Image: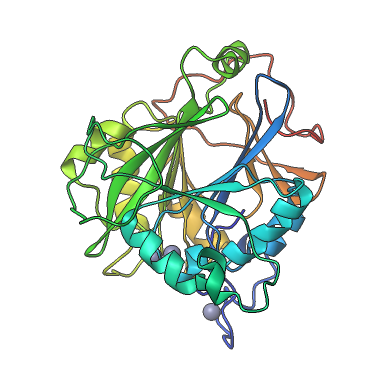
Length: 342
Ligand SMILES: [Zn+2]
Ligand SMILES: [Zn+2]
Ligand SMILES: [Zn+2]
């Protein structure tokens, strides 16, 4: 839903080539994603990854009508300052609650920033606030035995690795530890729950879209976390700009990490205005592209760009040379898709 760095692109008060570009690829909302599918009871499901300041515009652009869960990668403004907008999803879902998943340190920030939401006594006028169920993601380090239950903050550690998978209506989100400068944050591996009806349906598409991984605001991948990226076929990875940055990967660092991970396709996200799409994308290695806002990846491995509700534009992959061939018989990507994938 968004592929830009913290200030968005164009940034305020800038006349650089990117910020004055007519190329739609050079217009980037704050980085965020949504995962849409139809579950085994035929109910559509929507899960967001992060809730940044552009959430309202993003929800309108993709005609999101509900929200079943939100995974928060970390506590920075560009990833949490849209959480207030989610009250509209409560209203659209007969006031059903939304499940929010975050680490203890992230919850500390959410409860401070949104005190009026999480501490009813602070909402003096009893005004309309989001109804959010709080789930704490335990430290990713493999099988910790910790149960995923609402609880208060506990001490944090920075060990790498994968966390306890979180299954929502047939879709599995596995937390992965990354480093964002000195700050430990989360990415997510995303795939259908093995053995579920959803997994069967995706399998029948011959799809190459899953497993996917969303890895924003990453400057380093801890040793133990590489295992959680094994076999990922669609990778979204932080690629800020050319010049070094203490808390983000450069395009070159991201390209090197992408080559190690070996996904069929890697999309660079959290892109800054130093990057000009027409100039810089061609220099990326095979299989690595700049993501664009609205880019929709379908489970069957195809892709299209949703520029407005129901308005689809084609998007063609340049697959990684080592990628498995895309199966034949897939729907042409020029076909307008009015239904969510799967
Ligand atoms: Zn960010
Ligand atoms: Zn600029
Ligand atoms: Zn950040």
